[in-house]
Image (tube, rainbow, N blue to C red; front, side, top):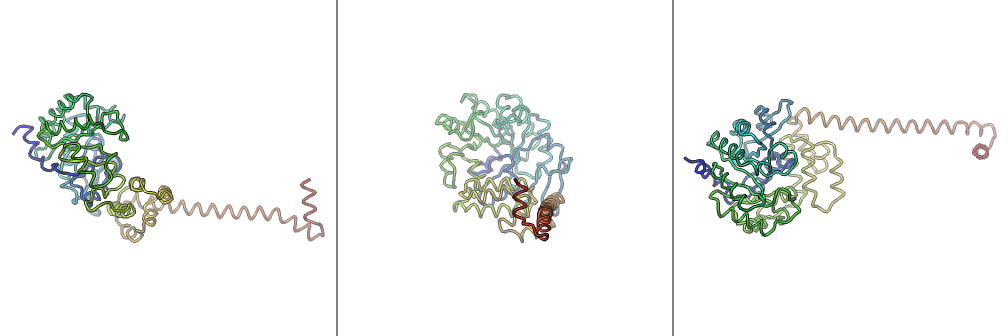
Amino acid sequence: MSASGSGAMFSALYRNATILAPMVRVGTLPARLLALEYGADLVYTEELIDHKLVQCRRVVNSALQTVDFVAPDDRVVFRTCEAERARVILQMGTADAKRAVKVAQLVKDDVAGIDINMGCPKDFSLKGGMGAALLRKPDVVQDIVRSLVQALPGKPITCKIRLLPSPDATLELAHLIENCGASALGVHARFTKQRPREPITPEQYAQVQALARALAIPVIANGGSLDIRRYEDLAQFRERCGVTAVMVARAAQWNLSVFRAAGLLPPADVVRRYVQLALRYDNEFSNTKFNVLGLLSQTHDPEFYTLVSQLKCMADLCRTVGLERDYEAALPLLSPLARLDEDLVAAQAQESALQLAAAIVRRQASSESVEAPKRARAEDGADPAATTTTTAA
């Protein structure tokens, strides 16, 4: 079977799909599971760098019922579970075919597919030869995609690109990726230097439409952050791009129920469910808080947003959203580090209380040192007020 033929085997996975886009710090396990719960067909992880993943060991976490990929410093780089295994796509940041294959072989039994990031415009990616730097390195792209397709015949391999300045150059790169055996192609409909706040132009929409017509594999359109707010907008964006699948980023970051055919849920409901999943899977508090603030960022309750932004631990967050009992039930599952964080916050609160008590004692002592001479003079028959006035003068 040819490389392009092997890619077509898995194309059905991506056709007519609504997909949670890869987003740094957003695409961790709780968000992926909630997106699936609300109706997403596939979910991408945040971009995970090959240098980090290749050092990880695969650990079956029987307490959480997860599979963890753990770095040498015992930090969990990637956590997944059975509920998403058939629908989670691991997005990898890489510029080296051999390292990419090593990572793919490490995770292949726990993910539905592998995606290569060829569109990230951040300096970190560009300086490492990853992300959008690959758009101008077709030989490297060919080496990576072909190597992965050959090494993992049972898994779909995909790429996510941005538009090149020339429509012909974009089409040429897309055909190369398809001919290497990729199963689908994700396209962010902007150029590398464009930011999400910049609208997609009619010419850029036309480029995506041309790709969809020219390729036999599914094209997944991404970049509709200015136009997608609710479920109905997904179909409109898909139609405007002329593609078979749509990938959602910012709209999902703001409200994961954008995938829900029955309509958006109130942010408070989405936050509560998100925190339940974060607690269930021992998600790091700083990441949980970051995503909760993202889910609250479009609401009109600045006081609640400020309150959440000042929280210091998962216990406080659970109390704030009414999940005290869930927190108590989950305590045995929390990692020692998470429990240590809770103890540290409690200790800091206790220390603050002690500091306040000490300040009150000092204030009282200072007050008594001033009042004592006054009382003594009053007992001797002097006028305290007069004495004070004379002293002040």
